[in-house]
Image 1 (cartoon, rainbow, N blue to C red):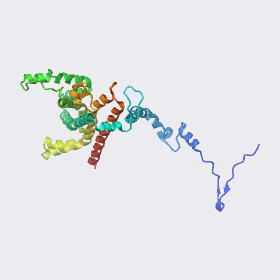
Image 2 (cartoon, one colour; image 1 turned 30 degrees about the horizontal axis):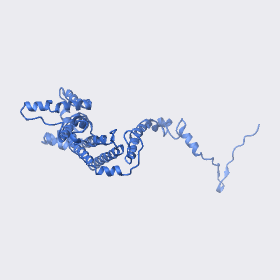
Image 3 (cartoon, one colour; image 1 turned 90 degrees about the horizontal axis):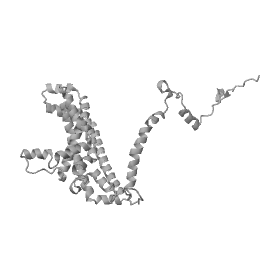
Image 4 (cartoon, rainbow, N blue to C red; image 1 turned 60 degrees about the horizontal axis):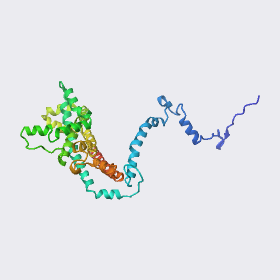
Amino acid sequence: MAATQTAKPTAGPGGASSAAPGPAPGRLRRLGRALRPGPAPGANGAALYRRWWLPWVWALPAIACAAGFGVFPFLNTLLLSFTDAKPLGGAANFVGLSNYTRMLGDDDFWLATRNSVLYAVIVVPLMVLLPLLLAVLVEKKLPGIGFFRSAFYTPVIASSVVVGLSWQWLLKDEGLVNTWLEKGHLIREAIPFLSDPWLILLSAMGLTLWKGLGWYMIFYLAALGNVSQDLHEAAAMDGAGAVRRFWHITVPGVRQTMLLVGVLTGIGSLRVFTEIYMLGSPTGGPGGQARTLPFYIRDVGLDPLSGNAGYGAAVSVALFVLTLGLTLLAQRLTRGNEE
């Protein structure tokens, strides 16, 4: 039998012996060791068989959906805004900044922008405050309060089209509102809720508020649960009334929720379409005077005969910039309050 030879230690400097180091694992070997199943080096407990790539596997469907339905459409819209593409496809020519130049000189674009900004300026403060007041009212543990909470939330689950048709029936010249006002001798002739551009916008704002009150009421109910009742009791013992306790205890306690509601409502107000379409007809009121930016994008970018998808994409980019500006402003206000 041949004798087994073992590696002998080599003498190092100063007579000390040391074993010869083995070859360092290559990059491919380390990658294979990280990917193959089995215990992870240096881990213990539940992390023995956890790999660095495993969380990415679980997140991959969400990442794919975000990329396919969010990132890609945005980049495609941005590229489309520099062309003269048609809604039904075909050859698209690169036109540079022509669509943006046209947009800056388009009176209809500025009219739609004014309507969208005005919509947000009026709706956002009301939507921030009214659901909070509603939440304070229904927060009390009273007999039958669950019925009122459900009743206030019912418009949220109703279809926007159904709600729009209902309001259209209520507000038309021979509708319920004008009929009651005439029979009460409060008006002499029907109020043109659905034919005057300003009244169409105000009616649409009322519809948005009515449909959103219950939704944001839930937000505030959750936030009010975190406000200490001891503060209210201490303030009441010091003689503070209900209004003073509301402004100095309730409002500071739900400030972050108010900012969240403001951002969500602002974004929704700039994107409003269904309310204007249902109350102002497919033309957006007489002469399109009540059109908002999403409505205008549909008219100029998606019309199969005269539409210009490239110009519609440029207006969409402008709407994105306006929405982004509102979001950044809200974020800055949030930081200021936190400091």
